[in-house]
Amino acid sequence: MSSRQATALVDLDAIGSNFELVRSRAPNSNVMAIIKADAYGHGAIRVAKALSSANAFGVARVSEAVKLREAGIGQPICLLEGVNDREELNLASVFELQVVIHDRYQLDLLERVGARRKVWLKVDTGMGRLGFAPEEVPEVLQTLGKQTLLGVMTHLSEASDPVSQKTGLQLTRIREVIGKSGHPDVRTLNIANSAGILGHPASLAEWVRPGLMLYGATPFDDLKPIHDLHPAMTFSAPVIAVHPVKAGESVGYGGIFTASSNTRVAVIAAGYADGYPREIKQGAPVLIHGEKRRLVGRVSMDMICVELEPGDVVQPSDRAVLWGEGLAIEDIATCCGTIPYTLMTGVSSRVYRHYRASS
Image (cartoon, rainbow, N blue to C red):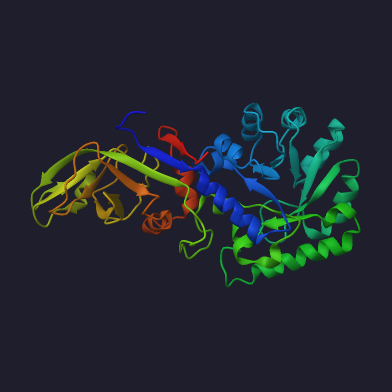
């Protein structure tokens, strides 16, 4: 790794600690750890190996699952978006993947191929995205007769909002589906996401699906960090220059920052090509030597500029923390009007991932 490179330090012990919090909040549930999108930017293979006690893993797409299998990950892997064609269905067989069935074209595909798979039935109880309507479930169950049904899955659309009544309505709907079906495997439910686990105990069932909380960020809309969660990623980059800016001079593209007095800026080798958000507001915090300093000027592809205080002793090769240890990712998300998910998954492939673990 070059010392001039942006780095994402991933603390695998923090991820393990967050996983244990899931276990403590849902002690009677199996855990399907969600590691799609390269484990939210943290590295799916390394995270999967660190979470060897997970009962299963969840990914969005077949290609993600294949990489895990080829890396030797043996736990059950669930395709949350299911399969789209015969080729993906065959891969699901070859790599022994669980398949979520959420649409009639998937039912038709199973019937045409004559396939027998381990499947989850997804029911749309209010997300309005994937899944069968509750009233369709009896007919779908009949069509799935020869499949190995693992249970029923639904997704909570507003669990991140603690005052929303939508979660209660969705839980009522899925319980009604269970009550009317009479199918023994339909009683195995997979409902709670991170916000459900942390904020809606009634959503805990035979399975839970933690995602964002595994990586140490809050899933709630207020973006207040949760004390019991341990941030797993520290995104940092080196200072590559420190130079003076005279009063009246501007910094960066467009001149959106003009110095009101003589000052200095540290130029840091990270920009939107690394995943640092271009839309972040002026004055957003950046950590240098443990002290918060403010972003000035427009974020460019490879660099950002940070205004220093008069007494700061900063030189090239010093590192700045963009989020992580000492600087909550939730605070950065607030500064650019987004959520921690987009920041984590937006860290680009040219950012070097370095892993830390006690064993």
